[in-house]
Amino acid sequence: MSLYAFIGALETGLAFALVALGAFITFRVLDFPDLTVEGSFPLGAAVAAKLMASGTDPWAASFAGMAAGCLAGFVTAFLNIKLRIMHILASILTGIALYSVNLRIMDRPNIGLINIPTVYTYWENLGIPSLYVPAVLLAIVVVVAKILVDLFLSTGIGLAMRAAGANPRMARANGVRVNLMIALGLGIANALTALSGALFAQMLGAADVSMGIGVIVVALAAVIGGTALMPSRLIPMLTLACVLGSIVYRLAIALALNSGAIGLTASDVNIVTAVLVAVALFAPGRNFAFLRRGVRAGK
Amino acid sequence: MIRVENVKITFNKGTALENSALQGIDLSIPPGQFVTVIGSNGAGKSTLLNILAGELRPDTGKVIVDGEDITPWPVYRRSAKLARLFQDPRAGICENMSIIENVAIASARTSPRGFRIAITSGTRQLAKERLAVLGLGLEKRLDDRVSLLSGGQRQALALIMATLGHTKVLLLDEHTAALDPTAAELVMKLTDDVVRTLGITTMMVTHSMRQALEYGNRIIMLHQGHITVDIGGDQRASMSVADLLKLFQRKEGTELADDQLLLER
Picture 1 (cartoon, each protein chain N blue to C red):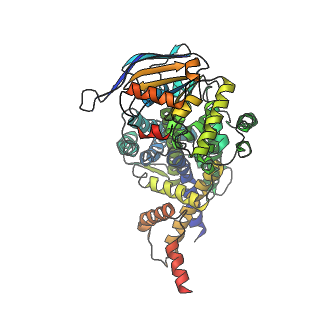
Picture 2: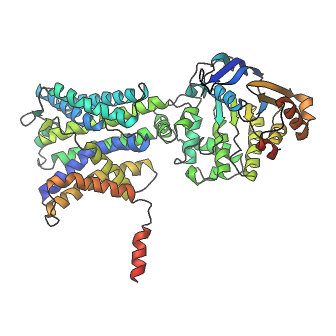
Picture 3: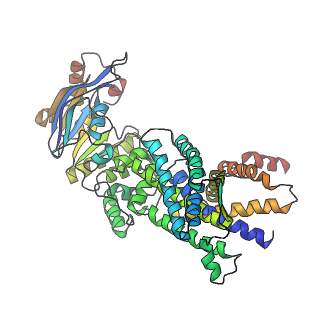
């Protein structure tokens, strides 16, 4: 793998680590499969790009995108809690609606950000080689986000959120407003996802309405794969596993596509991802008796 | 402490399955009293408990706890005043969280939760002191996952969790029924000790006549949505399980149809 390919995989992995942290909150903490991210990822990008194109400071634009993502999470929560639509379906509805919303926000399918100052421009002006800037900056953002998520989950409200996901009846009996926790968790997760979208678009040089396709699978690959590789029950270790899972996933994909020997092309990414997620869901805790039997027979 | 005024509830109203589970319950429980509730299946015991806990809303009537009309309050809001132990030992705790995390969740029941770190040295100290009372060694296993505990240990932990904070009322929903006899005996003894020490007003639904006589200081019998027997004091103290069984049969007006009651006498 070339240095360019390695850095490219690393920075993409770091950008998606934010989505993975969000998916950890929804999928693992709240037990709420949230597909809103397919819409909130491009939403963050669209809001940030639109604002930056009209001259807004790139960080302010990114945070505005983050706020929009948080609202998208609240919409899913509303559909689920108030209208009693099944969780996964509620999130699909929000995600699909956001596709139109994103087109409205941008007025067209994409906005280029090539000649507009981005969050990375400032760091390039500091003299850091431009190849490394996104990786360095994203690493800082991811570390800060990870620590904030860890701290949040250890507060009284964070613990209540974990109880709401693990045992809603027990949580209610202990005074936890389970619905509020679902809304809060979805808000935080989609804010992280939208921030990821905003930072990713600035790295890519464009926000595109279709950039959200497959985001959920990538996030699940990071969460499920990461926690399968590093099983733990300590929250800081689990969030670390999600971040590393996101990076390892991208490196593995880059390696597979670059090796040439296996004969995979870029169009095979999705099936490789799906197989990886399926294996990571199946493998942990199995003793693979059928494999061992074969070994014993061979002896 | 608890006042139930003319509470009525009908399930499946207007259908063939219409069932008047409670048909006008009036009940007043003074502070510190430990009431046991018996009755055959379908008599309305669990319905009454669920109405107190807030999982069901009565069609008519009022529930007043600690001087406040809590009839419209949702479950999470009621939890500031009353705590509950479930029959299923898995229902009252979070299995995949540690003992101390469970205690921290429960201890915040009667106070607002915030953005402060939940588990402090103070929480640990409190957990140690309260769990030591059980004599099960749980105070030395604060960071163990609850899924490692036995059913009896889980119910004992749930008992301590339920009595943290400023719990005024404790609701016990056949909380020893899913345990083996030894564990059931232990949990029942611990419950009695804790309730007496803290002077918490308690209502226990049970299938066991013996339990109903041995613990608490008042017995209520429900039959077809009515309170048919309500005895306390000397009359109750001089009663044997056989007496209670006879009374039960007379009130039911039938041979005992409920095998479980016979088995558990």
